[in-house]
Image (tube, rainbow, N blue to C red):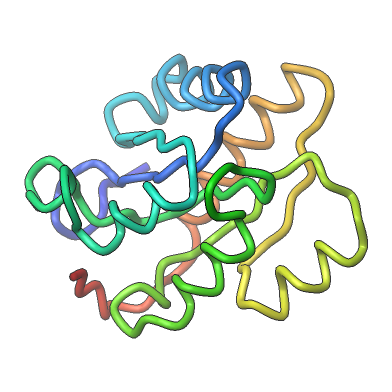
Length: 158
C-alpha cells in the first residue's frame, strides 16, 4: 500500500452522530496496521458542522488542522442537516464535487438509495449488524477509494 502522491496520510471525513458507530469506524482504521499510519480519520457529528469543515468556516478555517478529505463516509440520518442535503451541497460545489462520497447508513429504504445516487453519491452501503462485518466493510471501502480507485488529480479545496 502506498501513500497518496503528496506523501501524507489520506484523510477520511466520517460524518456520523452515533458514538458507537464512530468508535467502530475509528477502530477499523486505527487498529489495522495497513491503515493506521496511512489514514487520518476525522469525525464530525452533524451536517451543518460537516459543511463548515468542508467550506473552511469557523473553527475549521485553518487548512493545517482541517485538511481536505480524500473520502467522505456520510450517514443519512444526522442532525441539523441530513446526509442527503449535505451530499447535495457537496456535489454542487466545484471545489468539493470530486471528493468521493460513500453513503454509509442503516437505512435500507429504496427511496434513500435512489435519491442518494441521483444526488451524486459514489456508493451506498448499509451498515452491517455484526461488528466484524462493520469493520471489514469500513476497511474495504477505505482501501478501495483511497488506494485502488484512480481519482481526479483536481484536488483543489476551498
